[in-house]
Amino acid sequence: MRTTTSPARSANPLDFLEVDGLLDDEERLIRDTVRAFVADRVLGEVGDWFERGRLPLELVAELGRLGLLGMHLEGYGCAGASAVAYGLACMELEAGDSGLRSLVSVQGSLAMFAIHRWGSEEQRQGWLPRMAAGEAIGCFGLTEPDAGSDPGAMRTRARRDGRDWVLHGQKMWITNGSVADVAVVWARTDEGVRGFLVERGTRGFSTQDIHRKLSLRASVTSELLLDDVRVPESAMLPGAVSLRGPLSCLDEARYGIVWGAIGAARACFEAALSYSRERVVFGRPIAATQIQQHKLAMMAVEVNRGALLALHLGRLKDRGRLLAEQVSMGKLANVNAALEVARTARQVLGANGVTLEYPVIRHMTNLESVVTYEGTADVHALVVGGALTGINAFR
Image (cartoon, rainbow, N blue to C red):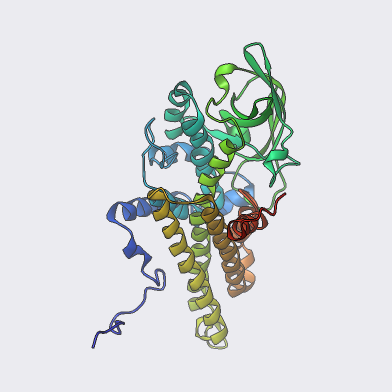
């Protein structure tokens, strides 16, 4: 009779469904390299960065040397890695902190991808090698104070003036905004929505950081102000002539979030599992109680299920078969799952769960931003609903 289980082998609590065995050697090497970087360079200090509301900019060059900036893009100094390899890197980065993964996502999947996909050869040659090396930082200006989930309602406009373009408007909640050397700014024109490369120091272009935030504190979040900013024709991204341009970039960033959120969830689960074994109450570790084992089991379910979902979407992407609606399902499912894991882990840790001595409350508050940016949970639910029913509920 054929045996379907292996009673002589125990499940690995940190890889219960053996997802590691579904990766090839190169994917595991990339994952382990990023994990080692996060352990060595980030985990010991990120609580302090979060408390102080800063992320050291020297990390950008270090990430560049590791080949993580725009790593899934081809040419121009980019690594040309697979979608799965990029996803694994996002998972490990966000296991460190969502702010770190956001920095890499905005640099590679938003700013660099926009230039790579929609820019001119001159723009690619001028910016991508420096951005891949971490010598130049980019940001992505789409969201506005009154146009978040509905980018088609943007008010920022660009008008032709001779051979130049003049931009006027405001962008909000822009990661890397005040430290960026170049901003990819999207604006309405008489020709449709167009993208423009606005360099730091351009007259009329200014930024101001958003303070007093209680989420994504180890990240720079800014407002971009464009007061009749004049840029030459060569600053326009020639390939993008509608909302399809910025939305294609958002799909790239959302894909990274599908993986990243599970990295944050895994960090919370591992902290709760370790704590439950060490915390003694009524003469025995809390891991020995049924109620805590149930919490740990449900967290493990979500972490492993989310990792399998991310891997499946990554394999689809590498085969050129990934749909935007599938990315929406991935972000909706994995970020919601990560939030539930973080909140449950917070309960397991009790009072210790609200201190920065442990990673849980930091991840928990960060995920409150992740569930909102790059499309809220409500918006992604409607995207999936529209794909299921064939009916657009937005308009």
